[in-house]
Amino acid sequence: MTQTKQRPVIVTGGSRGIGAEIVRLLAARKIPVCFNYTSRLTEAQVLARELEEQGQMFCMVQADVSQPSSVLNLFEECDAKFGALGGLVNNAGFVGKASRRIDTLDIDTLRKTFDINVIGPILCAQQALKRLSTKHGGSGGRIINVSSIASRTGSPNDWVDYAASKAALNTFTLGLAREVAKEGVQVTGVAPGGVATNLHAIAGAPERIELMAQLTPLGRAAEAKEIAEVVIWALLDAPDYVTGTTIDVAGGL
Ligand code: NAP
Image 1 (cartoon, rainbow, N blue to C red):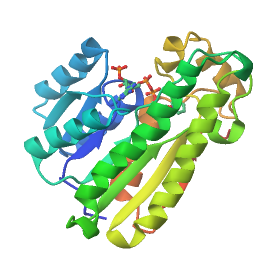
Image 2 (cartoon, protein in one colour):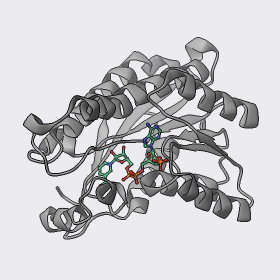
Image 3 (cartoon, rainbow, N blue to C red):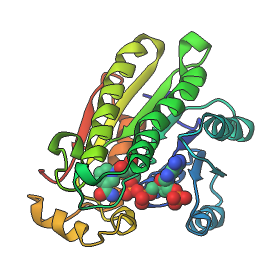
Image 4 (cartoon, rainbow, N blue to C red):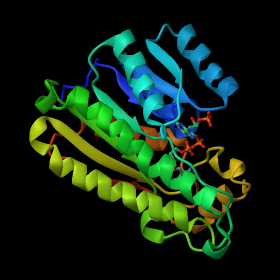
């Protein structure tokens, strides 16, 4: 697959964690990359400085994937800076506070979880399709959705709402892939197990990384780069025949 090579890629939530590793790997392959942050500007600037020092082609945009106008702005910034899009990585994700049952879940957290994890990727995919699909005059490309193995474990007593949102994302991956299969666009999911990022500490449970390590047959949590490498494979190197599926990267879980 050569279609997305050297054409720009948008990585949502690319400012830190798994997304930042995806951005670094794209930059290492000299692929222009646009990434967003939402509120943590300082962390995004650390990555931006690193890319600047390496002379990489990138743009950094403040964006909220759950807001249509914000998503449009992200894509238009990328259009303006780098021209025809090559791919999209729907990586941005949200979890509410860890270790709680569904009967204590508040409506704002529930809505935010689905807004960011389901509606966000769909809004971004709409913009991507308008640029990639041959039906819209594009020359094809790829969309990668970062899911979670929570979609099949259900995350009881922890994040059932999050798990349900990622299951919805998997179904979106399948349906979208089938819808656009003859339009030059492949859609693939990547579902990590436990990954050592700040997501857990921000959710109030930094100890979850160690807990996940104990539950994982491989005996440790993944490094963000290990997930990013699979995303890059699906985005740039996998044969076109890989579409509509979600690949587990979960150390045997
Ligand atoms: P993370 O370290 O918490 O980073 C989240 C990123 O998403 C940040 O760049 C954040 O920006 C951005 N973001 C948050 N809300 C957003 C919004 N409304 N619109 C746009 N961007 C937004 O997360 P991570 O651990 O790298 O996780 C990345 C993906 O992997 C997520 O989809 C997550 O569900 C999935 N995943 C993670 C794990 C894990 O153990 N870490 C396991 C399975 C799946 P700010 O910095 O500005 O907030």
